[in-house]
Length: 290
Image 1 (tube, helix red, strand yellow):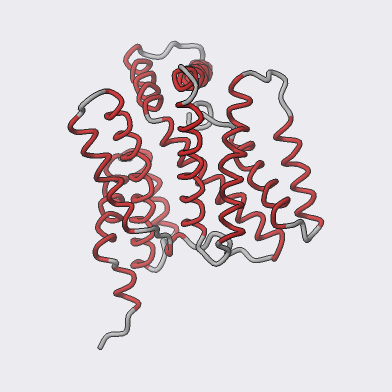
Image 2 (cartoon, one colour):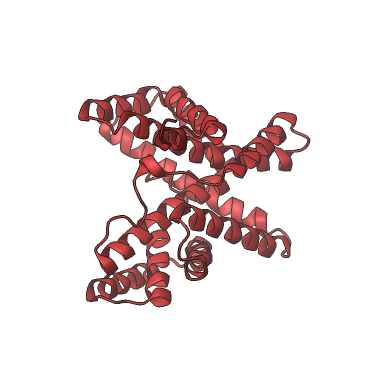
């Protein structure tokens, strides 16, 4: 379902940043050049070059270019800071470009809704075939389309999260092929970001709850979803740090919880992540006891 309802092409969103990294930072090894050629092929391929084809690649170039620029100017900073900065700058530039053109935002929103609707149609047909041709219950179909409608409202946040993940894959792969190191992104247990971003989450929550108007509520919902995912990852990092890593049984239990109790698991991880903003448990554990 996640793949069929994706609002961007994952290969393009990973390929463009990798290609830009190779151009901006150099292709020191043949493996980097080979993957860059493959990425270039993925980026230019496409039979139906409609509006979405160009939107995917324009966003990839914008976010990937910002990430490469931050990497060149701040090479000593961590990945998460550069990736978040790249997404933020790209979002501001994209918002400005859309604001100066009449009805541009409405057009972008409509084409993304069409892509998600097509993805849902494909997923429903696959489920019907899996059931041997039996149609899905109307209640199930309604829930699927309600979920897609909710995703359509927060698609900027979903796009931001997908971009962060794609930048992580591209950077890890580039560092791995260029230097042989597998620490380009770093382990999950060390994941953190600027503590002041908690105010973005709080501000989004205020806009979402007060609902002054539809636009402010949508902005608040996107801020809450985007930061909520980041804080859930931060909470998972705290748990990984304190537990020393998960065993096979632990991974099985987490997977079980994400499948059958996703709101409970994600909310718990998010609460831990937000609490870590003030408690900073990992720093206190690392400090020697007086």
